[in-house]
Length: 264
Ligand code: SAH
Image (spheres, rainbow, N blue to C red):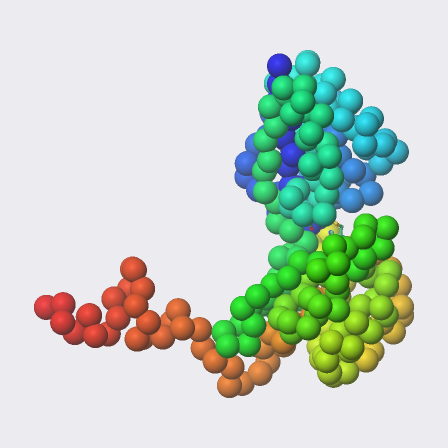
């Protein structure tokens, strides 16, 4: 019996899959991917003769049945997931029946679109003294948010928010942020198809104008919204330098000045 691997395909660029993910693809007897979400270019790693299917029109039961059936015939079966497979996917639902059938399952991390979007925009998600916390979240829609995780309560932390699956409702996102006390001039970055060859689009604006900019650019899906007091830090003078490079901050591999001077 084979093993089913949930492999993060990364955000889109085929060379942003991990080395481990690419190796598993190159060894796979069967690969199931979501045509609409996973950049098909990563399939370039698949070996000749590999069975490749698109799960776009399959329901959850059909996807599981497909994986289960292929695991009887192939040593390595890959389910390609967009970004990182542990975020906003259906990994638990898909793995449960495989677990029940005794089919071994493995998970391979991928570069999440949150990280890829920050990189595409040239931004940091954390900044010393300014924000040291990142929240991955979304607006509630069909998927209800647990009450204690209401968007408004998360926005009230004024830390970095990586907002998935919500670009269609950017006006509501802006409304919640304003209610939570974010200034109309607060910076926002929207990244559409981060790292997709020739398709990536980075939109910058403020809470006041970002919805209009998205509309103008016709960005309605596959985009990540970043709001953070850390945005634009590279252009701002006077930000606190990180303690990591503070000469008085002891580090395991770099002696502090004090210990350096007592060393000899
Ligand atoms: N597991 C994925 C997220 C899947 S949910 C990950 O780790 O990235 C799908 C949402 O992810 C989209 O609605 C969008 O908000 C975001 N997304 C996925 N790929 C993206 C990309 N290349 N650029 C920007 N956002 C992306």
